[in-house]
Amino acid sequence: MVATTDSPVDERKLLEFPTSCAAPAPKPEEPVKVVPLVVAAVLAVGLTAYVWAAHGAKFGVLLILGLALGLALFHSRFGFTSAWRQLIAVGNGQGLRAHTLLLGTAATLIALICGTGAGLFGSKPVPVSNVGPIGLALFVGATLFAIGMQLGGACASGTLFAVGAGQSTIVLTLGGFITGSVLYTWGYPLFTGWPQLSGFLLSDHVGWFGSWAITIAVLVAIVFATRLVQKRRVPPPVDTVPTARGFARIFRGSWPILVGAVVLGVLAGAVYLVSGGIWGVTSAFSLWGAKILQVFGLHPEQWEFWQLKANATSLSKPIWQDKTSLTDIGIMIGAFVAAAAAGAWKIHSSIPWRTAVAAILGGILMGIGARLANGCNIGAYLGGISVGSLHGWLWGAFALFGTWIGLKLRPLFGLGNPVRTDSIC
Image (cartoon, rainbow, N blue to C red; front, side):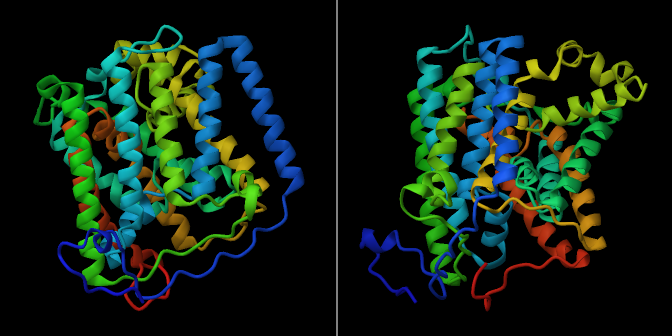
């Protein structure tokens, strides 16, 4: 066990994060799944070539960035759901500290992009478009989303990379996610007009350097706060995953979670540079659901939500010209490639009925919650904080509250929570 006593002025010990025991040594990875890897690679290359040729370089690059995001998410097993669960249940802040590194990396790059007005393919950063309003819809939406991700077993980005990795239960979560998004668009008049205030963008008041400095300062404070919580509660360590050794680890995983945080932060900045907007996930689910309904002869385009100008334009175009759809599809295929290379791609045919119900219900709650809150753990939490928007911080606070509620509900569906006496969490 790591010693838990220290001097209040000993900075080295302030950066120690005690756990009840050492984390287990990772096991070797399984052999490469050759057939799935070939299928995934052909799919990645073929789809990229098609999108690039048919819709242009900008959309081809966005798909490539999605593929890279999928690789990084799987290789680092970067999670939001498990990180918040581990923090609330037993006080292990490892995952949340990784979030701070991701957020800090993305915030740094986005501040540089916005401060210089840089952009590729004719894109220009418009940070005000990424500022969410502050009000009841944000608070309720973030809470519902967090409850949903604890029941569904994954967040927005986690759902995509888990589906790509062949996790059958999370396919149900994705189905629920799309269903919840469609329910929101169908009932849009019920979800509008809730009390709210205009969004608050730090750079409007202190400039981009000031916004960046305040963001980094708060993130550093969170790191030290999680250290104090962990010192007091001495939680179990986070489980390790199978890993390759040496140079092969780059391609077969698993990456240290802090490496994954930096890579994901850089890729989030790249999405901003290419598209002029933050990396998002969940708006695509509404679009996919609407297009599926149209295939079956229904007319969601007549709903009030899809008659709004921006939404109508999005629905009228192919998904290969939708930024979020491209990165989402790329994440699933990239995770498919990574999981097959790691020997971890597999489809589970048996799912307990209570787990299946929780997955679908959790997905529905996330679909509704993400639209209410104007984003998810990526679009609102990562995107909001990285551009210096207050709504991102508030989303995170209410998501922690929703996580606490979700942990209370998980046992009803036969889902476990970490406890202090576990050897891992």
